[in-house]
Structures are given as C-alpha cells and as structure tokens.
Image (cartoon, rainbow, N blue to C red; front, side, top):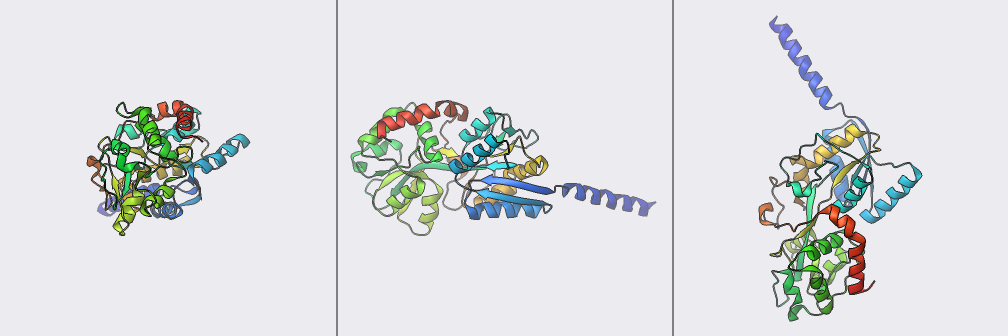
Length: 326
C-alpha cells in the first residue's frame, strides 16, 4: 500500500509538472524594445516555457503601430502579443476592442495608477522623463521651473512630442499640472527651446556640450554617467512622467494561452528583475532599482490619465505646434 501511495504521488507530481509545461505552440510578439532587450526577454520567457516558439518583430512604436494598422485593414493581424512604449496607444486599442483582457493576471503588488483597471494591458517598467544637464553647467536644476531661469536661456534641448511618445506623455503631464500648464511650454519657447527629434539626439547634444539642459528619458544619462559621461539626471521636485512599456494580448491572438503566460512572466518578480538587469526601473515596487537610480519609493510620478490623454492628444499636439512651430 505504501508503494502504491508513493507511486500515486509521483504520478500526480509528474502530471502537475507536465501541466505546468503544457504551454506550447508559436507566439508572435510585436515590440518596440531595443533588439538586445527583446532577445533577452524572449530567451528568459522560453527558458521557463520551452514548448513555446517565439517569433518577434521589432520597430519603434510609431512604425510598429503603422504596420499593425495595415494588418487590421487587411483583416489579418499577426501578433498575439504587443509590447510597446506607452499606455495611450494601448488605451486607443482597448477603445477599439482590439485587446483581450487577462482577468487572472496578478497585479496586486502594483500601483493601480499604472495598470488598466480592466486588465487589458499591463505596465512592465517605468521609463521616466525628467531633467538632464551637463555637469559642467553652472546651475544644478531641481525643479522644472529652473529651466526658465536666465542661466538656461538658449541652452535647452527637448525631444519633440511630434516624434517621441515619451515626449508626448511628458508634455501632457506637465501641461496638466496646475503649477506649470501651457504657460510653462510658452516659457520654454521664450527661452529659445526648439524641440526636435527623439531622446537620443537630446542626450547627445547635452553630453557633447552643444546644449546644457533639457528633458530626456532617465536611462540614457543614468547609464552613461556611470561610464563617466559629463551628465546627470534629475528627478524634479514636481515629479516625473513615465512611459511604462505596457504589454497586451490582441483579441485576435492565435495562441492566447501562451500570450497570457508571456504577460504573467513580464509582471512576475523574475520578469521585473530582468527589466532591472537591463538597466530599467522596474514597475514592481518590490524589485530593486538598478544602479544609479533612487529607490522606487523615492520617485514621484506625476498624475497621468491615459484615457484623457488619448482624447486630448490631437488638441495638445496642435497647441504645441502653435507654440513651437512644426
């Protein structure tokens, strides 16, 4: 009888193990992650679910969405999972009924402000935008308003919200702040700011000394400062905006089981530790930030409502163009 019980227990354990690994098939991922990060993410996921074959396609969020829109028009969307820069884009897809809710996903550890209440998309990291400055500059800013001081005049670099999704969200967060508003952006224009291009160009201009102050995503100066670059990143007293690289399952997913497993991995502690190892601030408050970042509880996020941002997107960009020109 004892041997029979042991055998039954081993059989049950084997069955449970087999069920846990019973996630198979092809999973198609569209992502805006850098190539190396995308490959590392896929490798970590398939190490946990070796029965899944992941095919991934990478491009910037704008181009990736153009590709996906064309597939929607043709009635043949290819991806199971979408992992892109911002919540506003996901909010648009949700509104169109393009996303499949993952109701059993465990988001209990996360700040509800960065997760969709209907579990249609899930934030996977915090890529914040604050102030960057060249460490040879005379002023060390601590507030956004410091960039309106005489020391910063004609020395500002900013990414354009007409080009950068992170810059769009930053503009929305700052102009929605009652202490800043559109008057702040008008002040930046008076300071000689000429927003153009993306974050990479801004970083290069400030690191090279062509400009001394500006807005940029956190990881560029934080990573490079550790390597000796003459730059510093400031989390201003008013707070920072953030793109959260959300992940979502398309309603047309061919392999929703594997897609849900992919989402579960990204928001698990292991997935969040992977994000931290890649040099990003994890969205999970219990996972330590990478070197160079303050602790998660020391970072203040500015208020941001993706649904409102989606509604106001075109009006905000028109207002921006009126201030700075096309």
